[in-house]
Figure (tube, rainbow, N blue to C red):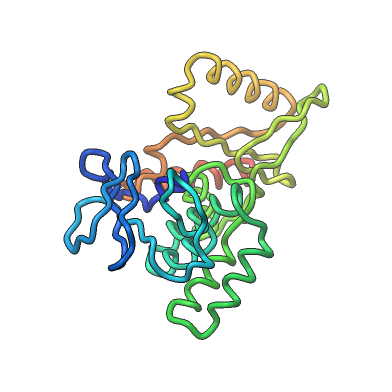
Length: 239
């Protein structure tokens, strides 16, 4: 997941020293890969990459280390993850690597296998155009709290007709939710100005824009999550 740039589960610690570890089956030559410790280890502190298994499910990839293709990796991991994390991983695979049809075929091929039921439930919640795991977290939180499901990554017009892409939107209620993660802070003033300009123009056009930050969705702060849901509910009901 790290090498493919896909999200690992919420709260999962970084590999010790930033070093990824890989295990290879007996008889396989250990590849020399920058940033990856390759060995036949039982105990490990970092994440695990595997080069074994069905060769047809592997891609010749990263610096000579064959990686399992993203859809198969998601199918392997999702049934063992908390539902939200499995969906967040699926959203990322859907956005960057596969169509819904390709993911559906992969899930259907695992019918009758261990974890197949959980995998189908995860796929049912996977959506396209989701930019980050925290957007997945917010969307599923809203739905589980009884709010209608927002549409993700849609383009909405301001008063001049200019279109802006937003994280989540309820068109009927004219409510938008935007999530400001670290990327907004790290990109600096240009990103901040762009976001402020977009939100100002959309509010002037009659849209209600609710902005969330990381602490709004922290699983260790249930009161903050409740307040987040309440803010969005008030926006949707016009209160």
